[in-house]
Length: 337
Image 1 (tube, rainbow, N blue to C red):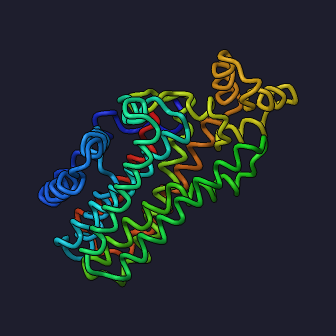
Image 2 (image 1 turned 180 degrees about the vertical axis):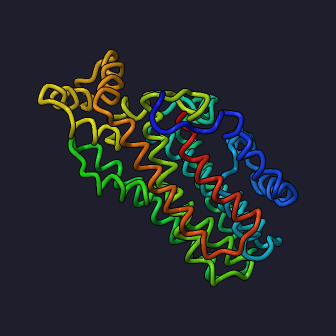
Image 3 (image 1 turned 30 degrees about the vertical axis):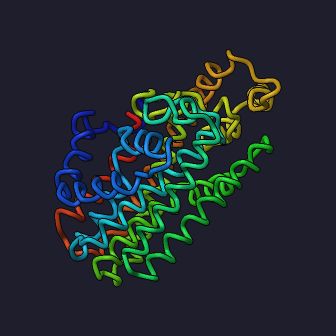
């Protein structure tokens, strides 16, 4: 999919994540130990299901943001490790719940947990991981950090409910879409970066890193949404077209509807209704999103948020850790190519 100015090569894009992982390798190893220990339980099913999803090949972007943010303003420490593990557990819990709500069959390129263990077990183990996350946050021994992640968890839940309600509408204003994305995705990126700084004693940089995380999350989710209409399962970790089949109104659809003809808008009205959608509609939806320039416009929107994220880092001390956070903003957008 050719959507914007010449990107880096796929190898270069992949190396961004690898370089980040190498930069905090010892810290990540400590986080992985915590994840393995705290995902365990004497109750049957919990260790199998939680181990399956936790070790399913995610890039650990959110805990890496926490760790690198800490190093960018001070140094990561055991409290940072507990915080980063909690961030990953919160994220994983939301994935388990999302797959049930969205009826998704794939997650991180593998069968979704609910396809193996069922909906009930997925919901309950998601609840278990949420609880484990807050056990870890207590160990971080900071009431402000605990409060920040509790608030983020509330915001995420509100965003998910808001998206569910929005699926009943055939026409979603762009500002409502962005509010949903900021809540369901941006909130955890924001809290991960902000609390990473707080855990390292860098409170004076917390606001800058919160701004970075929020805009990074927006860029990341907007790219995810356009990839649903032209990406690959390998890149997005779920089935291409899932959002369309679930009748979600995302930014590429909003732009395509706005730019399209009356006939196009009639198509979207029918195709985004689960009672009238047909299997052949996805191909035409992809065609309209490309033909109207909605794909390119969506990527440009993500690039604007990535630029805002990078701009927020200017107040941080110059370091390889700040550079890594800037590169991550590029990675979030360049996954589309």
